[in-house]
Image (cartoon, rainbow, N blue to C red; front, side, top):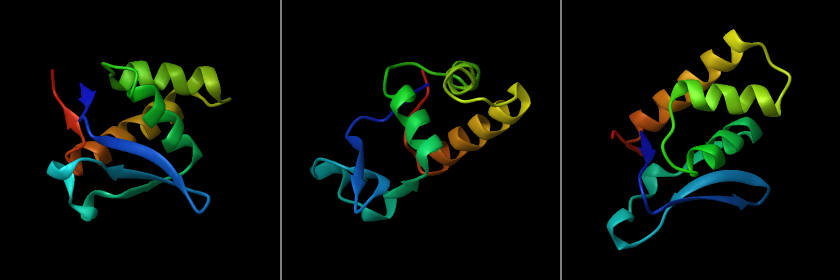
Amino acid sequence: MKLKPNFELRTVCGENVVIPTGIENVNFDSIIHLNETGAFLWREAQKGDFTVESLTAALMAEYEVAEDVANKDTAAFISKLQEQKLTIDN
């Protein structure tokens, strides 16, 4: 899957937020706050196609985290993206 275009990760007042850009995305209900781990996963997902497995591997390479914990956290992150309709299935 991929992230939908026209959404950007920004730091606002020290908080990581995903905001819509472009006239077609003027829906402020889509702004989501991310912690540092979520922001890392967003930046990884912005690189192109991603899966739970690819983001889990990136998370494990960046942080000292067990595979089962990283997999659970990544799956929850992707689920939230899908709930907010921020992903496109290939």
